[in-house]
Length: 476
Image (cartoon, rainbow, N blue to C red; front, side):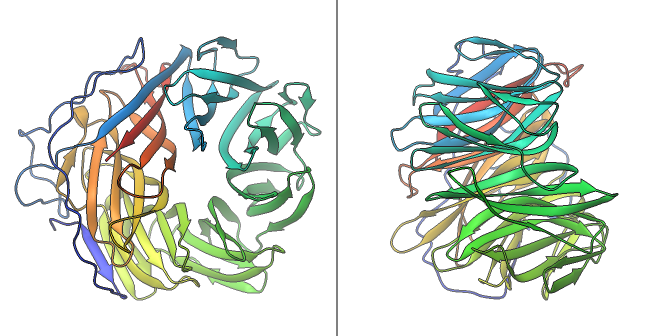
């Protein structure tokens, strides 16, 4: 299948106003001390790809512009977990590190794993840096910006410190609020008893909504909370029924939030119930502004499937990104993949009915990590997709081959009406590069900048010992 696999149950014609760009951009490191080699041209001495990867003609080639590529290094490991653009052109980055962090200034870790949040100029110059640490570990998973507020979410073990603020508990999920000058307003670890984590957060106006999980009494349940900017917990909702349910993605809807994750066995959200068809299936639920579940849907196959990214269009359509193994059934449509983790995207109605879906069959594990919406030419709306892959993958514009068959990043643009491929490119270094978070500056394809927060293993022999954070700012 030269264009990947697409299943469509709802179709609206869209003029093919965009074509896949081809060519190759040789990238020079923009940060001093960069350990990456420039990306290499696609290989020609490759073996026949598995079914689903065939491409007509030559390999897909990458054509894109790099505005910034910056390594965030130190002694030990570092990841860039989340990124967020600011209207000024600056951006916020956040992540974790061990040992020492070097980002314009050196910070020594106080625990086994610490976290950081920083504001950088459009040129990558440090404006300010804040350090989060605990007596054991901190994992800063997500950030969100609304007006002059910067929200942080994650989990920790041991008393958590942010400037002069301290956590009220010794472990669990946390949420914190800073202003855009980096001044902390409050830090709160309030939540259900047990081990908890916040995986994703979205903010609008005076509120933020986070989602993740809480584990207690041998059960792991999906957890979603709404917070006010004054530090008040507005509501908290926990799933029931399943022995395992974790939320991983959240998006704002006109009347509440959309939450996605994976579960096993039976899952209940209020009065709504679903059952898994395999090992772990995907769930999607809508909560209103009072935290009440409005509907619940499950999508799955015989093995493990996960939701990793969500987006909501102004007309109410929902977009889902994730990974599946072997096959994934959504209502009456089924997409097929290999035995590894296959990235996919899907469009759904405002209540979760399948409209179309597209599988990106890969020769090695891959994952969709982020979705965004932007304007194309005319009245068209495009879905922006970012993730990582290893080996070979086809997003629809031809075969992409990662450097040395290691893990690299991909970005693609698809028509929201029918999932047709518009443009795509891949980028990476000669190391295992994984995408953790992404964001978008601009709302149209022409001139948009995609921010990518990643990690790259710089030591092939012992990759877990030497891992750098990596920030890309690119445009198609």
